[in-house]
Image 1 (cartoon, rainbow, N blue to C red):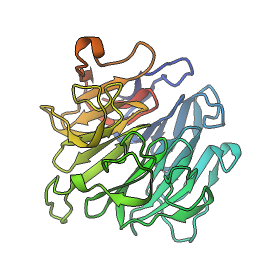
Image 2: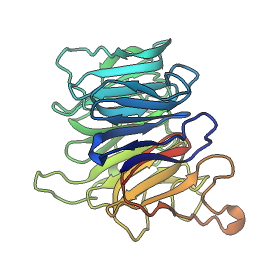
Image 3: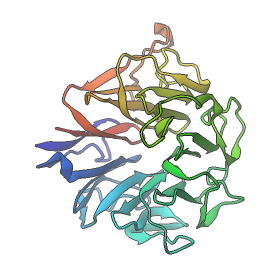
Length: 338
């Protein structure tokens, strides 16, 4: 028996319910939002929790017949893409609170979306076949890499890309050659460029060049990136994790509450297979299926020792059972456990 389990968080909005499936291969995507959680099987999307802007259908479990590839929860909206390349949204977007899925209209009809990412009030979509990235929504800090807030979906000027992530007001894209590009709000060093300036054009994070290793397909560098509200984490092709940005709650995992202006290697004795970020915490899944997390996950749930204890971070292993997928909401994590 496989189950989708929620850990941490507030729990008062119903976002902490669990779901069981007969086979772990049936769980194809999971996502956590501020007060909602989603899990997709091969034939159905399930959501629980509640939302102020329609990002959850109701406080009770909702079931839609959809073939889902990727899900993302933003501040008050949800995105998903289907196995047929269609991108849908609901919640608060384009000044509309939608409680039923609506299609995203792209600049050309040949867009086949394979991944979505959602920030506080902006959205990203990736067409992996062509490497194109599209953005829409709030651009107050440059997180959409356009000249103004856009209700119309536009292309992001980045090289051919293979992975996307969105923080509260910043964005990150991994190119097909393994380089990381970031843009948007930079006040807390979450862009990794060594300054607190906002960046309106996707800019390569130079300090990460040379990480990872050469693969058969000539891909080197970074495999995944995750964005918290004001921090960022990147996973290399060799299973190392780098974190940077705001560190006041221990979300960077470097045995200090200091912020980091540049990507800093996490000093751990395990190899990481996946990484996700909440508002003020970070969670990783190891190659052995263990889950570790650090930072702040709700009232009285700060999982680091504070300033009075020399600010030493504690990497908490939350599950001994093998975990096969992770996703982070604002203050909770969603795990697929066998």
